[in-house]
Image (cartoon, rainbow, N blue to C red; front, side):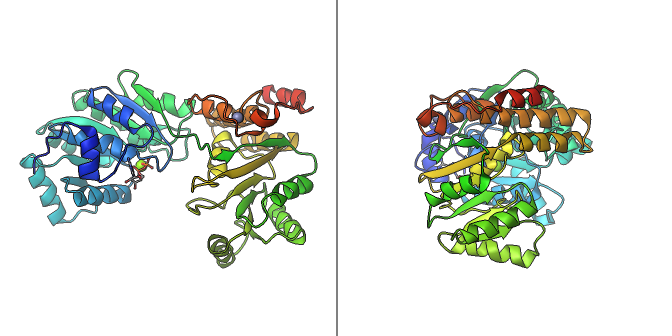
Length: 417
Ligand code: ADP
Ligand code: MG
Ligand code: ZN
């Protein structure tokens, strides 16, 4: 079946079965269709795949999609085929039949998207073989894998700049959910010939109220916060396992249905507490950062931090577990000089190379700056992701104004030390 559609919205409706574009998608898609290179930064779940899949259908020739995980490639290929789009992948787990299908579709020109791992693509055989087809678009998913400073560094991603050149400087579009300056600079340097059009979208979660306070009496501050959320589900993050156990015990004493969660507990116990939190209403989890990855509970109404998170990214991820259903959610983050000192020490004493430490320190300092923000928290937070907004009206500083924390000077000394 030959697809010659001319209207992105019609394609979205007819092929993908979606009503409307999500925030940011249309602009990115239009830019890709115009032929320009793109680096798009959007949070997980924002719909990045569609941004390269749809333009791939609007042109002749082949689109190559680079993805770091076989499972991700398989998923996407299956979904595309489900929508009637000829797609395939090159990976080590393909059987003969699958390989034949891909080869045939390539030969008769019906293959629209070919998924491949970076190491596959960079191999001399692949280069030779691909030179026989017209590759019109190179889409690089999870592009932060190119950055040494992230958690997902993959040396093979560094080869993609060469792949692009060997494909005749083909139009290249890259996508990631990791947005900070260091990562972005790495992506641009390693993958692109010239700086691409940059898009940053969808980081704002306007239904989540933001508030941060200097620590005075943590137990009382957390209790007061929870008092205004009686009967609701939420998470209280603590800095250590001990602090987590203490928090759970204290909150239980104060009459809140609270369960602990940290890596020092048995996996059965953790699974049980998580299960109760997911299934029952009004349960509070007191947890270390071990809790939350992959937890998708839509009606988490609040997230509190009894101590400052590790970095601005960690903060964003952790508060982001609240209000997935789009209904109002509340957050409170407590911070103190002791937290800042502890985080600094953790970075200084780690085994990481100096450059990594520098980046970690910047990420920590960005969070300290958010704690001490002079105006709207959301503006400051999103500015870190390079997304610009008006003052939000849904943070403590918009609502109550700035009250100067008398540790400000000390904090600044600590930051510049
Ligand atoms: P990301 O890669 O940004 O994490 P995905 O591309 O995996 O996100 O998309 C997340 C989900 O959103 C998928 O189920 C996808 O089908 C869906 N989706 C993408 N765009 C739209 C849209 N315009 N309308 C409705 N659902 C969409
Ligand atoms: Mg994705
Ligand atoms: Zn605000």
